[in-house]
Image 1 (cartoon, rainbow, N blue to C red):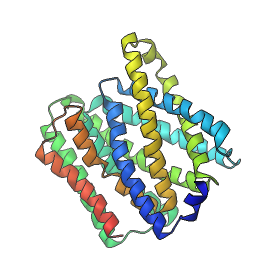
Image 2 (cartoon, helix red, strand yellow):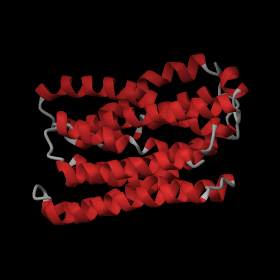
Image 3 (cartoon, one colour):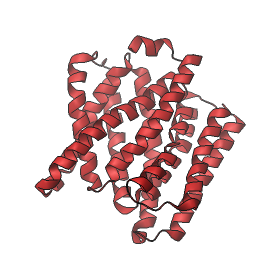
Length: 299
């Protein structure tokens, strides 16, 4: 599989595979966000997911894939620090704001920063049409933020900090997308990077939330563990898909296409979390997704 991935890097086939992987990551990431935001404490939900995927990745990292080359260790260390900051910001945002408020701003802000990062670090360049798509996307983001500031009633006292945390989280999404793209491109085997990354990344949140676990009612333990296993599998597929997409094709385009997840997030929030979306917010979320599509078509 690693040889197949390597053989199509930078080719037309690689471009189409990257497109499919980025869209798959969009669907899965919306599901992942809903799993973290569900009825349980978002800190414990994230800790359960992280702990489960860390345990599942460990035997693969230690026994299946090739071990990392020496130059990968500082890359892993930096990647985990970035990922940890992102998680702390995201959990704080979900704690203060509704899923359909926080998620679109996080996922919509991220590609703008990711495009800038890809331009600086990977010398990628967007056409005028693609920048127009980015402008549509950003317009949808700020339109959604303004609408929420004016109309959302539930949790309104924490809405402004929730939106601020959402923007900061989006910046860290772009940072980890760009840096991890560098990491997976540096690794000789992409699956080595993914397996070891997940194993290391599964350590922090369970330790950080240990006091919350101690206070958890025993009746909630099994549901949280089930959520952790499902979320871990979704995380493998979601993060793995977007990282493979960034190795096969342009980082900026992959990051932008993933943000069509806002449409799926709206559907999940409405269908499963019973959050009111409404026609105006749906339209603004669709505008974000349209911007992402324009970026791809104009490329």
